[in-house]
Image (cartoon, rainbow, N blue to C red; front, side):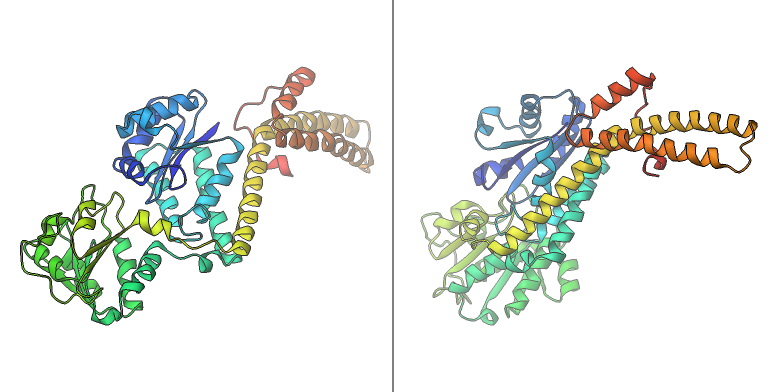
Length: 427
């Protein structure tokens, strides 16, 4: 059985999502240790999801394991998650991978995050054949949505949306003094988007010490740790996008108290709103101490605020994308259902063709020199096999494949071993 425990921006507070995302690597191994056949965890800015293949763990047990692995009491999770089971899991993941469940419909970052979730599970040894197929099909569905619909063109990435929201405060992007905090893939996307808008005065600081390498690669200035606070004070636009689990920017760096008094000289070069500073926090967990929002002259735009300003979905693109996702999920289940009866179909065909070959040999020994008897017998065998094979697939699609396997054992004494399927089943 497949199930998914999902907490997202639709069901959980930003603070809870932040807590869940702090230690995602511990969840899948803990689930497997508890008896799951496989587990893949997807942790992003706006969602935390555990995909589990299990026969021995019920939903309550899975939730208990998630609470244990994340260190969050079960009571804190109550009302903040949904459980998706069985046939609904595939359609849910396919929709997530396609950006249909994102803050900004169609945003492109989620597809890579879904792929990395599977890669991480492989490295941890927690994936399973069913989860492998599920996540691989999710990527295929996402690519089809991207190629066939206008969803991604209708939607916008979180980076682009945050800078569009900043437009109301910024008269001239070229005049901004920008400090980028972070050097990962998200930082590279942010830098490219800043340049698209005309920003030229850009520096980068890395809490992990990779600023110089990033700056050299992208042709911007690196900020050393000793200069971080000074540059932060003098920057008009600060954007954080690191994977740090603790805030990397706060009142201490800005040399101000929460009451608004500056403990240093007033920042210079700040054209945003008459000398104020704009801080955009794209980190998850949050990179910026919320106290920054209470500093005089500082405006904070975080993921929770960005979410509230997400545009309405483009209905036509969304409807087309959901139709593709639904079709892909139905196909996923059809293939999976056929797999449950395939060993039985193979066993039946092997049994019938074994009997056929014995009868053909006897016919030859009796003088069937022109092969007409053999031809007739082979045709008859094909006709006789057609109906049970078709019925097997119909039963499997209805979740009743076990009835076909039971009938084989009752009528022919056949008990096919799992994994017995061969390509001859579709011949």
